Length: 249
Image (cartoon, rainbow, N blue to C red; front, side):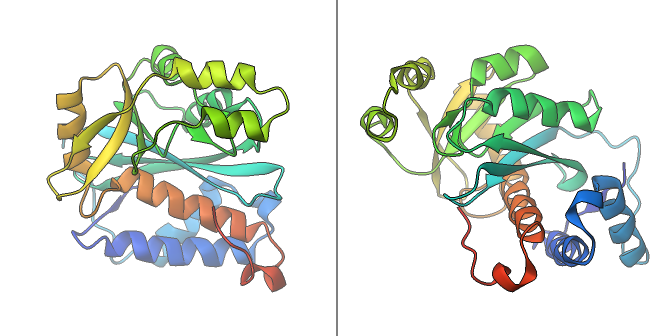
């Protein structure tokens, strides 16, 4: 796959997203695939893209994030493969059902669309997404065969009450939520702290991995870029006249 190197200020990512938004808005979303987007980006940045050394070893993390509005029936999923030397190495899209129960299955499908076996780690932007669509972190780690880190950024006393309030019969979702277990706080070298649910990786190793992917703040690059791509993809699926009025979740 085509890879785009990142500078320390992530200028490549900013340029990539500008071109991505333009391409999505310029082409009918139903006919726009990841291959088309990569082709557009490759042509636009042909003179500025550095070549990737094939023998350069690095950890590859798949960051997964979403974008939706409360009135949407589906949420856009984006998955971005980024190496620990901060080179974007591929991406794919999917969707989950808002208030549904398909988050785990759809993340597995997104991973399958990448058609690669060199991903070393999954980093999720939360494991309770799309209005209480709960990701089974242990199932992901088991079925894909790599460790999973699911991140949040604030302390919480739990959401059992919110689930029961939102769903007339929410006990099954409460059971799914309780199965996730507690989050563990992880201090990053940036000075920020995240809260993580882990599967297949120790707290110490998770901290080292997150440090290697986090340039600033609390959000690691795989998750940050995936979130930007999900927003852009969703915006591209909306009528242009409504884009300025939409709010991201």
